[in-house]
Image (cartoon, rainbow, N blue to C red; front, side, top):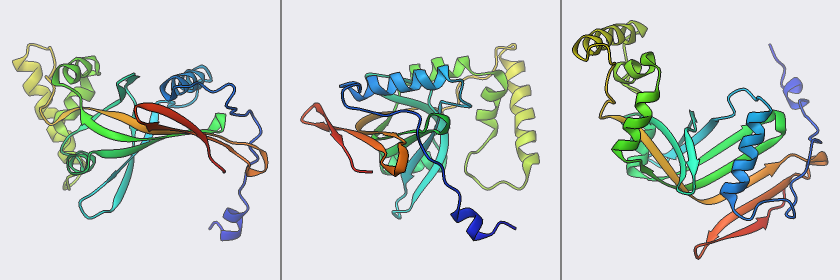
Length: 219
């Protein structure tokens, strides 16, 4: 069994690089694009994985890991089941927070903003690019609902697979009405770069009157 003293002694000195205002982009999406490209070039495991935080009607926050599927001037996009816990919480409270943690680069990006569903055509287009098994899985899984066993998922997948592959002549299933994309329109970003002695670099971009205000935060 791991002792608490062993956990307390875990620490790392961050010494790879720095984040200085003179080199940071003036627009946060441009800065994010630069860092994301560097994460891709470093061949990090799942650089597109991000933590999504939402809040329920009872005020309790919840988090889960989702995958970014696109970003541009309009915002950041991911796809999921609209009837899942996160979907229900976003329907009631359409603001959320995202976080990327690129451990190997000693970097964190935090993003906050309003979330809306992407239009049906955009969701349809992305759904058609998914592997066949994933498209069937979107129909088979009642995400976040209690099920009796994994056998329920296997049976659902077999049933929908047979149904769609037969009725659509092998074209695969269409997008379920309960599945699609969300887009966050950020109004606050934070870029964190680990530094030695815990004197980390933190640059925050905050939307103020339609313009981005960049500020340095104490670590």
